[in-house]
Length: 179
Image (cartoon, rainbow, N blue to C red):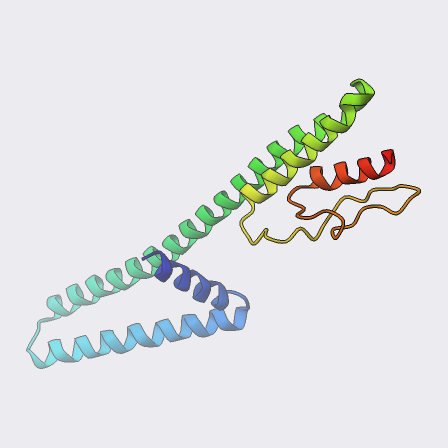
């Protein structure tokens, strides 16, 4: 059911991308409903329906078609709103985690010098965990590493056997500076 809703929403978004597509969809709906009503009226006339039966049928089916179209449009709008709320929640959660970690990093200068590096690395790990947890995707590669500025050659990914976190990479750089 969810997959069908996604397909319908994508089709709807495709239709409303331009005025021309929306107008063509409206014209198509008009022709479809007119053809069905014309066919039903012909069946009723052949069956010997009275004028009151014809009006009742006309009002009923017109109301039914409008209700179906309104239900479809409102369902698509509700689905899009749910998707937007889910995206806003992800951004809100990410904002919360990133701000907490950044506040630790930004205020680390108040800590003793030996605790500053640890606080910064903890903040970086918290940011990394938040990004991995909140934003889905493939995180098997560590393409982005924090730069270690040193007078000697900084450690590279090849220098560290299996880099799993930025903390290990930075500690490897700190050890190379101490040597």
